[in-house]
Length: 151
Image 1 (cartoon, rainbow, N blue to C red):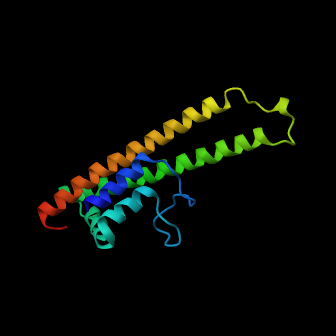
Image 2 (cartoon, rainbow, N blue to C red):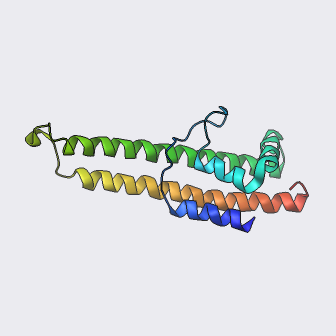
């Protein structure tokens, strides 16, 4: 379990984007985003099903914590998607700037990298922050589940 958590910590520190975009978990053909995938990796298939079942149980502390884990993972997935979309936009802008067929005088270069670099840094930092928060919430959930004997 500690090794699984440490793998998530490594993911939170990096912002390398996989080749597939983050999508909904409901479609089995589409892979989940890094937040949801991290929860599934740490808890395993049975643990992930228990987490989902506990979210449906209203009024219990463990159920509320399970919902927090799920919501935190979904927010990490959303932020990852936002980072990917921004990276694609930056790539397209740079492609326009580097296109030799375009008139160089009509392409705005001044400030392009300063703006896009700053925005990219903000998106990457927010995603890393969310993944770190997911680690903390997931560790709390696991401790509570062990304490109640549902792990």
